[in-house]
Every structure is written in C-alpha cells, then in structure tokens.
Image 1: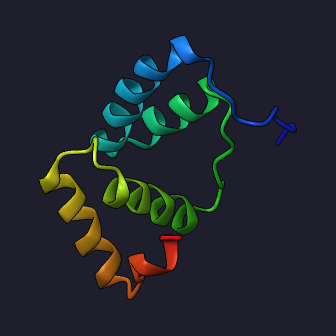
Image 2: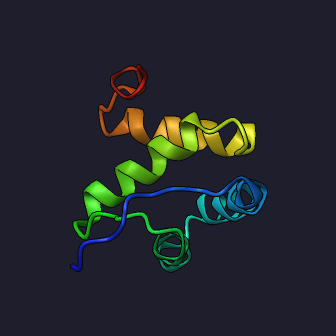
Length: 89
C-alpha cells in the first residue's frame, strides 16, 4: 500500500466529512467505507477482522451515528469480547 499523507481536514470540509462518514459507517458496506477512507486520505487495514473491529468501534463511539446502530456495533464488539473502554482515552 502506498504511503498516504496524514489525515487533515480544512474547515470548509468538516460538514461534508461528517455526513459522508456517518453514511459510510451506517451502511456497513465495506466498499463504501474503504472508498470514504481513501477519498479522505485515511489508511484502513487490509485484514478483515481488524477492519471490522475498527468499523464497529468507530460506529459505537460516534454520536453522529444513530443510537440503534451504535448499540448494534457495541453488541457486535461485546460478542467478540472486545471492550469499548479500551478505545476511550
């Protein structure tokens, strides 16, 4: 994988970024999520388990994602014995 520039947003991109991020995360469509990340210069793991854990952690902790979908991801993670507290500073 080619080295990507560090992820940075310009102030006028924030709103669009949030809308696209929530849409990608709520879709749980791998292609859509990877396209979103590539568009915004974010690297994503190629390994499937690592990818999906990252997606579900992002969904579970993002208050822009609907409460139901955050709960679904928290449940998915708990079934995998992954504690969200490990991802909170």
